[in-house]
Amino acid sequence: MEQRVGVIGDWESIAGFRALGLSIAEVSTADEADAVLNAWAEEGFAVIFVTEALASVMGDRLADWRLRYLPAVIVIPSAGLKPFLGRHELRTAIRKATGIDLIGQRERAQRDRQERDV
Image 1: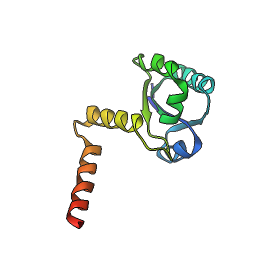
Image 2: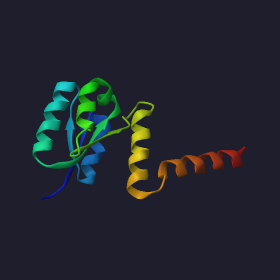
Image 3: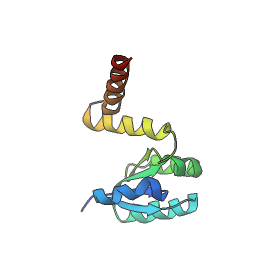
């Protein structure tokens, strides 16, 4: 069975993922998100990324989805918002998958460049 990956949230945050071959669904309410999550779970999606803005609207509903083994539901930063939860979760997921803190390395490199420029 083919393992698929999807992204749900606002259009500005998810549109670019289509170019990477991921399925996308533009939603703005918790009910719409639940409908997509249910449909994609039945279709066998392995990973579903949810934008941080949508995650805040979903509240406890998202917590229920995240307790499941599959699909893995991961919060990612939303376009136009200062990332907090999504950035932390993305950083943790990358670290678990690769064993490397890629986001932390980038942040340290940026700080080092700024210190050299001063």
